[in-house]
Length: 95
Length: 213
Image (tube, rainbow over all chains, first blue to last red; front, side):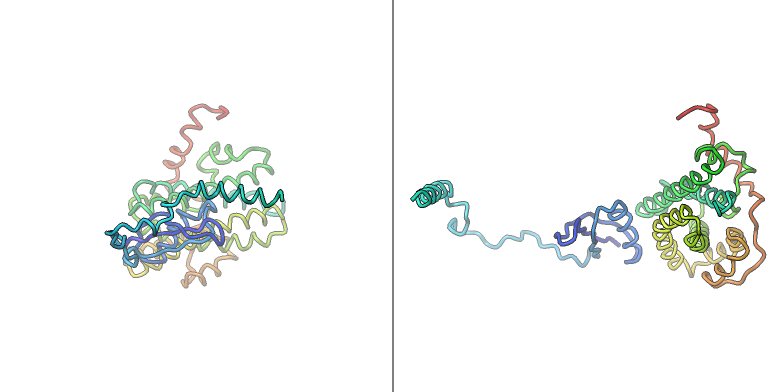
């Protein structure tokens, strides 16, 4: 049985996928996960999840047929706007 | 030091020889995850041996390496339990591992209360790592509990396991594994498996006597 292991490097940080391991049950999975991801103090906490409990979604994008660039921020040039805003701020400050 | 040097040497020799035996599974354990875990346990046993040897070496005016490698086989004080070669029988290996770790916990508990602060401090450090060994041993013992080969191995090794502990600590082991006390196979004598292990373990060291590595 394959288990996916997620590790949290420091308290409060998000859990990130660390790797997977094979073990016959949760007790073994925990022991091996401690050995592989905890021995050197490199993890604050672990999540151990049976691979079959992970739902994989393929091609996760929603339909993107029409041109809707305006929904994305990369269509805007911030450079010009930023420059104008800085100039305005400088002018207001010197006033 | 209040703890006798020979008590420390018994501990150290047990850990060195068992660490050596367990390391024989490296590369051939039943599956990859177990290979890594069991090899790592073998390494920590040898690390514990070194720490105890260093303590004894201070008393004896020598160093850890020469205690580990420069003595004759007959001078080792390890229990017969740890000497046996079992690298072809996983059930038997686990039976020994489980019995040894259970016994080891009992003597470490006693050392934790030692009035010698150095001994108690070292016992505390060792115990922190042994917690993982026990977790590992327990999970395997639980899994193999109903296998005939495993039960037979525990029966066979039980008198050896009693011999790991001094007489006054044996009733605790009986309680821990729920077995009756029987005649122990005592420390002092050695099995015929010790000499080949010793020859292999010391071959490099003996090849250039007195060299500084």
